[in-house]
Length: 111
View: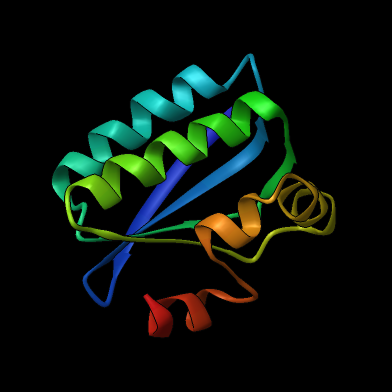
């Protein structure tokens, strides 16, 4: 199960997925984030502090989201991953490719 919350701070859309991002939830994640990005794609941060688990399908969903934002000239970053999610991002190489920040404040000041 996944819940997608969001807020806007400093003209940046912050997407807060809660729960698990996997094969069962990636479609909902994509649908919800696509709708939010239509409202603001200039600066987007996905805050991972409430994401308990991410699978390869979840990684693909985040990569697709990042590519969409960047193709429209926007800036994108990830922040605050929990240890298990952080490890998956590092092992997969997605962390280096997408930009992962230790905190939301650091992400806000960097993108």
